[in-house]
Length: 257
Image (cartoon, rainbow, N blue to C red; front, side):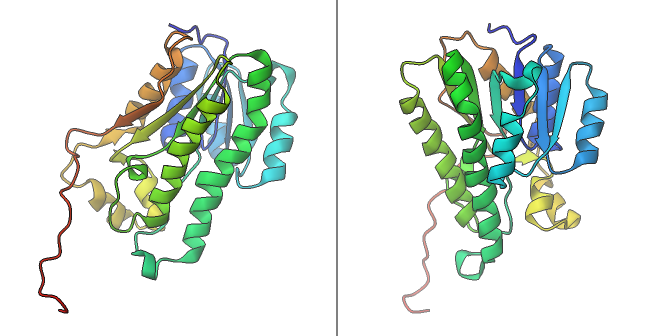
């Protein structure tokens, strides 16, 4: 297994869900952490909870200049990033494309695609120069399988899938690894964000199911990073047992109805 004690792990979107759980999992292995997110208070709470060196960055990954400045300005003890967990992302809305809010689409593209690009581009040169590192992107099964209302969200996660594969092509000949982890139904703040804070509607998504947890996905993230350095997990698709693929939809109404 790859030794992660004293490795430097950079986690975006670390204020909740997969990001916070991943930070805790790497901390349990003795890694030092750079955790970023938009909610300063939650970052401080996470820092106080962990017993390893932790640097917090209040940062919106959509801000290209702020991302570049933050990573360029990391103190020496945190500057050599060994593992990047590109977790920051969201779904906004579930309306069909013809009724979707363009502001929601912009938000998802700016965070799930452009934010991931900004952070990756800022971190990658150092990994290549040191000839080591691991970029772990958080995709989704929505990047492979469509569902009503998934439209732009699914499109952003399809981008993450393809970008991860193309990163591997660009990094051929180096020892930098790239993994795309694609969770299915998982109970975090995901649905609460998607439905604009409507807790009742969010709860119904998981009603009567046994979904994945943030800790489940954190364990997957950690596992890919802890494998021997010559092993690269390209894609890891993870669903709870209660979830599977749907049959093709066929409209059997009479033509014109």
